[in-house]
Image (cartoon, rainbow, N blue to C red; front, side, top):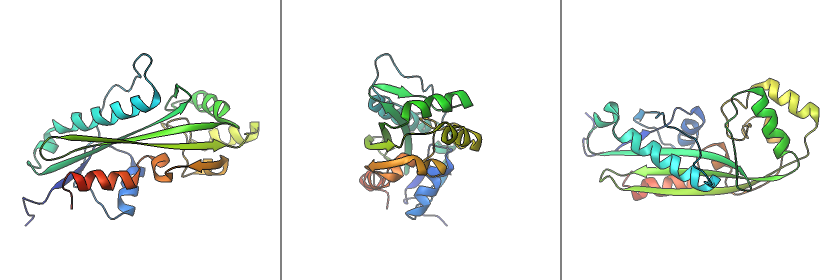
Length: 200
């Protein structure tokens, strides 16, 4: 029988990539509980601020989900959000081929920042957040690079219109920061916050 005192881990995300990253460090959530929140940036909101706010909102939204409440009081919630920024500009999560192309044109030959934030709610209800900032520089992309990539469909639903764990890895000239954060979950920071919340 499961020990009622052992904390249960909830991942407030449907992302298979985040699940794979947790698995990579030996963590398996007891429950996946994706939350549906409005991700529209506020007026004059910076990419970093947006990322932190959305991660926190996702964690708090999961707190009241029936399946989460059913796990009992010893529950820890982990939520994350990744935003790609070019200066103060927030790049969208690409939903159409046009979105993806627009993003790739903007990122071609330039450096951009990936802000990957996590929020952890401890059993006591306290919320801890952390934002990991990674600088990524793309090579200059040819028209063929872009059209081939758009055909791959890998960009769909991805912040900034690309997935670094796929073909877009070939576009990266330089990366300063956390590779796992660009995929969607900064592992070092995640483990620190989970430990702080009492997760074994």
